[in-house]
Each structure stands twice: as structure tokens, then as C-alpha cells.
Length: 140
Image 1 (cartoon, one colour):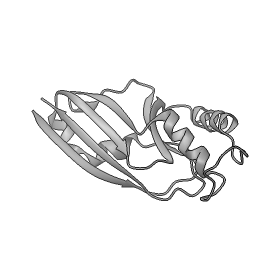
Image 2: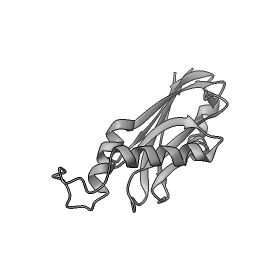
Image 3: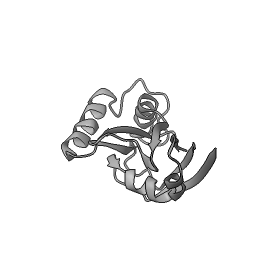
């Protein structure tokens, strides 16, 4: 079995949902040597998250942002954690809802994503800064 691991720092992005599939694939060229395996992408932050969803129509990502902002509002008077700004506690909640990692099968040296699937960086802060990922791929 082959195992590859790579750290990747993503550039700072605006708040929203961003497709990062190509950056991940570029960062871990060793997957081309894996015929059958798995890849985990993990984000080392508590106010941003990862998910897999549609990569074709950009309005899907805009609707994601709308949905999460409506359902996890800023400035909720019930939040106790508010020292880091109005967007911080909602960012933690959104990240907890979506998760800190995704698992993707590797087939013939490529991520086994569907035709319309992409990996999203879900940036929940107004000014989140660069985001750090750890990508691990393993298989035969």
C-alpha cells in the first residue's frame, strides 16, 4: 500500500463557498500512482469547513451562502462567544454542521468524484485568512 500526505495552504478567500478541487489534486501528485484507494482532505480550522457538491452552476454556491446565513444568523443575542466579531460564532456553528473533512475514493489515479461534483472550501468568516489543509491519500 502507498500512503501520501501533503499540507496545503489555501489563499485567503472571501466569505462563501469556493471550489478547490483542482488545488487539492495539484497538491498531491502521488495519487496518480494509486489505482484503488481513498483520499481524505482535512481542514485545520474551526470557522471554515469542507463539503462536496455541485461544481457547474455557481448559483448553487450562492444559495448555500444564503441558506446558511438565514439559518445561522449573526448577532444572535443568545450567543455567549462574541469576542471575535459577529461572524465568529455563526462560523463555528456552520463549520460544525458541514464538517472538517471529506473522504473521496481514488479510481485510476484520480479522485472518484461524479461529473458535477467538486470539493468546496466553505469560508464562514468575513476575513478568515489563509486556510490550512492536510491531504492524505492511500491505496494500491
